[in-house]
Length: 96
Picture 1 (cartoon, rainbow, N blue to C red):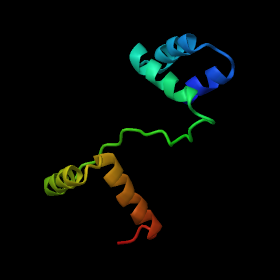
Picture 2 (cartoon, rainbow, N blue to C red):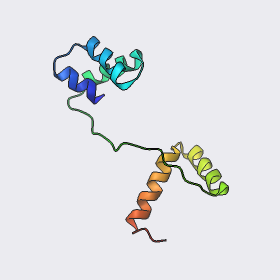
Picture 3 (cartoon, helix red, strand yellow):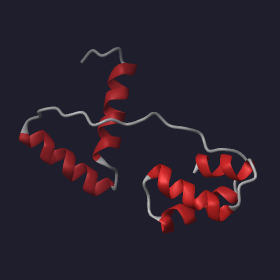
């Protein structure tokens, strides 16, 4: 959405921004249109977030099952739960 915001701020017309956004972000024209609509309402760019990468680990099956149950019951993603747990561990100094 920040690309759309920037292009709009530079004076490009919304249809051109939609076309560019769809191509650059590899998203549908319809999704790009929605992002451009939202970008037109922004006063400033959205804050950026850290890029996420895939990271595979081997865990005991019981732990993975509990993780899935917890995610389902709370509505949180697995990534969010694991990220929060790791940040909590690092805040404690990494010691159990």
